[in-house]
Image 1: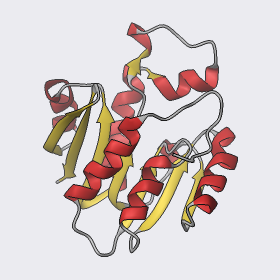
Image 2 (image 1 turned 90 degrees about the vertical axis):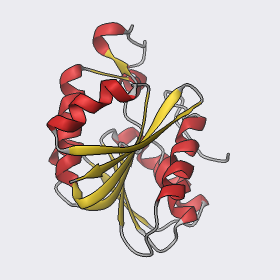
Image 3 (image 1 turned 90 degrees about the horizontal axis):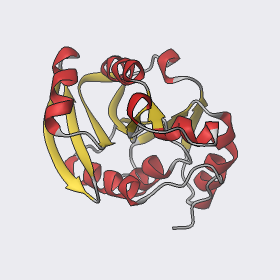
Image 4 (image 1 turned 180 degrees about the horizontal axis):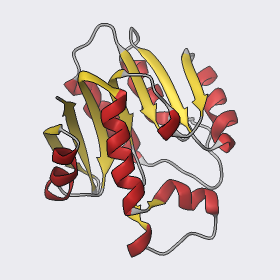
Length: 184
């Protein structure tokens, strides 16, 4: 892949797998897509390359990714809205949300020497709860979210039920789980 990435963050194949998984599941000719916590933009860009009629918004809170996202959008001739902001402040609604949130909990993993890398890899349990609460708010009714996580179905099920979200499908791919989640 020719994606430009910062030194502190390198996407891996699960990002590509998530875009392909979502593409196999979606049957939309028009709609709004959010790549939530987009990093360098790989998931949203790969998904949009397969679904050119959809509208893409990339949301990333770390401004250090901006130059990489801009480069990657230009590289693949993708027209998308880029928002550098905290996801908790974002209020628009989407048909599809794609996200590869941090895999590790701060309470049970060791920190990185890089604060930027650590932010991409680890989060607190409180942040994960807030993430799913916000996910529910950002999805349109009957909207679909696709996530890449290192959680099992059982671990995810409880937090989905609390937020009135439904697990539709999941697959194991290269040490992570890809989930399709529906808003009620």
